Length: 200
Image 1: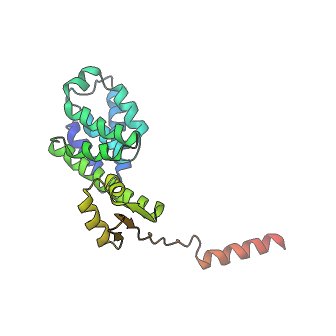
Image 2: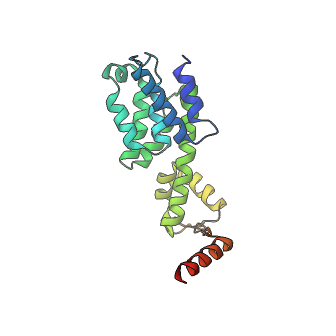
Image 3: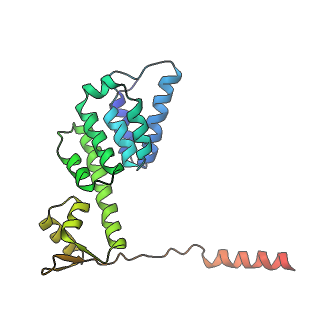
């Protein structure tokens, strides 16, 4: 069988969505169980756990954590560090989340996934701030974004937010929402003719 570490990394960082990767990892795990095989001793639990986190399946991550043998948890500090990321997200501890991402010497395969999680959550948090706030303090924005206050000011002003130096508040540039047209006119015409036919 192919090395599980290679399989997991390829799946989670492939051209397909990470959801496909997590599904593939779970199927691989189930195939091992169906054949009566134990997971290999070098099963990359940190990558498996982070796979759930990257697709925002915190419940899946929690249940995987509960299934992992205690001996494995004690012997793999990288796994414990990966779980710390999940715990911080579960409790909405954004400052802790960003610290957990940065302050562990991740292995190269895990570092790629940690970087993908960081990018994904940064994008989501920018979108959240742009839609939920009209003004926000620099300190609060920095906490959400995992940046220093000076980095937050630089990053947000580059995208059009304005800073009031007196109050240290950022005025958020609202996110432009483009309403997608649900139905094109040809489909609407077909529907109109169909309803007309039913009524007459």
